[in-house]
Image (tube, rainbow, N blue to C red; front, side, top):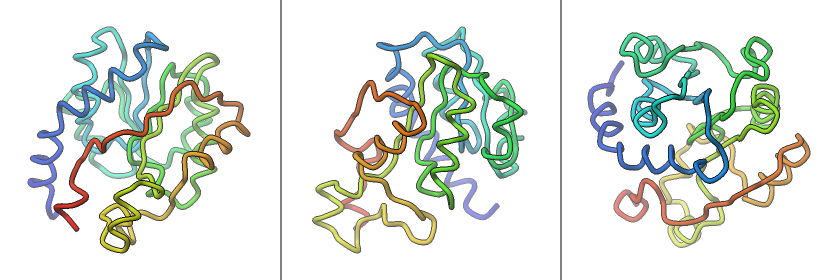
Length: 190
């Protein structure tokens, strides 16, 4: 659609950041199956398979972009639709489920997390990355902070609230990263 070309340029330029994300579970897991929720065209999966060449990378997205990701071979299997609707179909199927800048775009984030609890295999891992409403940039920039990004960003979790929600679903937090932004554009965009 409109803006797809420039969006592809931006996502292709983020290969180093995708590699960093892909390496994050290395201390905790050796995934054989990985589902990236909200994968779009599959840029993350394309880079992550270089880090984890023996891993099957599947993607899920609501748009037709997931079909393009499968056609390109950037995902092994593409699921089109809502994660909460697909969870029963793929229950217990994945060692790792990632939600990179996905949860804040959803209407019912607790239902999305519950879907992840169904899909992650026992002993598996859920990776969540989202804007931190308690960040220094968020406080300093106020209404000019890009991650308020209305109306696309519908939900915000503090780290404490996210950990509590995950705990109620049976997840145990093994690591929290609260460091520099993967997309360090806060000041320039403001």
